[in-house]
Length: 311
Image (cartoon, rainbow, N blue to C red):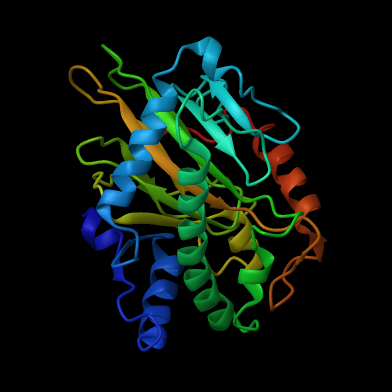
């Protein structure tokens, strides 16, 4: 079911296949809101190397990780079981490190080569994102580079972030949420997973970016090292006049026995604060990305228990 629900899209020969790839991307975005990329240009070795760096950070003591503290005003830095989900009323069972290009970074003394390697990985993610975003720009009737410019991480007002995530191993966690049901607030998310570290489940069925409605069934999406899971965020759903779907997803603990450690890496294209967000059909009034983002955070996290988890 997962293979049918979430299309696998190859970026091989992107320039010569752009029209074909665009059709595949739009079809996936209009229905599932998720797709899996292969032949995207980041090798398995490169992905495994970044996961190794991530694990080296999370293996540090809390005191050392705390040297890169979480700043609520920027949402950068290390946090531990600090994210409260409206869908569950509980805190996600994970720790994470949020990073921007110009944020505070862990010291290379603590994790040798951390910053250079991670910034290089972020640049590769930006390159892949640009290909996808250019296809969506053209499909929606914008200039082909519109969404690329709107998510340019080299610009000072860009809010794009990389998030390194670790779900600690847990015993007897049957039926609990490692990450509660949610949508992504940003524009487009690239998610990297590792073989056999399952738990991600998705649920299409949303019609409006501001609604909390969803379908009836969550479908597991097995984790693999190499393919990139990509999903539409609320921002791009609004920017497309609700044509491209930002759907709910969660990370669930195993039903039986121990849930092992799970590592994932998410690259969030979150737009530039000063860009004006409005779809081609002008379904919603114009608003800056910065204003829209602030309003979305307030709306989503004031809705305690509005979204009911579905098993």
